[in-house]
Length: 348
Image 1 (cartoon, rainbow, N blue to C red):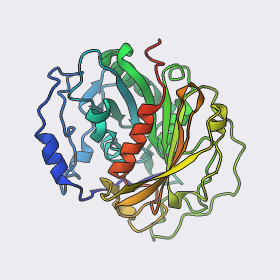
Image 2 (cartoon, helix red, strand yellow; image 1 turned 90 degrees about the vertical axis):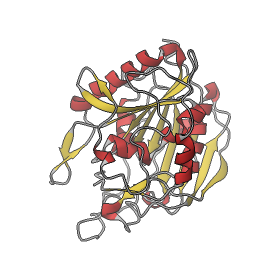
Image 3 (cartoon, rainbow, N blue to C red; image 1 turned 90 degrees about the horizontal axis):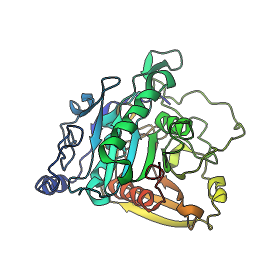
Image 4 (cartoon, one colour; image 1 turned 180 degrees about the vertical axis):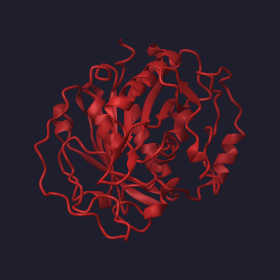
């Protein structure tokens, strides 16, 4: 799922950023050498984003010397609980792109979020072409584990109410690969897959993938799906997808069945402002993503799951693979994450 992440940040309410920037900091102490900022550091505003995407982060993971971004609430009080999100980008992307694709950082103060957003070191040849930055076990698993341990140590295991993996595209597939690993199985409370595959498969469209250089669709993929093996550990699961990426959304969920959830309920979220970014290199190709714009999202939640789990699907109408999430649908996803049970790290 290669993405050539040429970056363009859309016009968004700059007034909101001005108001946030005027908010005084209530939490004076630095965490891992990062002084809290609202708006978050290296945050995009209209017309100044191309240079910002090259910034690797504001925290160094000491084992590898690699940087990642850390965003946390500026009004955090000693002993206060937080929700920790490890935010993982897709193939060919970079951490600061992911921060703006799924901008949980914009809600860090309201929902007490700690968001760590790294950049992959690994690379792979995609379709015989040049190497593309992807998450690989050899180059990146130890780094993701070290970030997790560093953040837990900084905020205290007893203060992390819930821990979520969030991943876009190949980052979502990476989340699925590691969620039940020896390191993460007893820590992760939830997994958010952003166009990275659903538990209880939602088949991608036949021409899914970036267009060819001449703008034509990629070659057709083999039809049919292999039998799915469900993960063997327990966690909440939210799946978010663009309408044009999948053939259809299944009307049932084996993950909801596992937790004896009630029949799914449908609501909608309307956004009058666009997301922050999109893939300008392939603008106009609907499967991969057009220009970021306002929109509507269908929310399908399976309520009353056992053990306080959350299982939900989010379908963003008239959207493809790379348009950044709009503010209200981002907020709704964060609310679902916050509402889920947690405590794995606290109980360690």
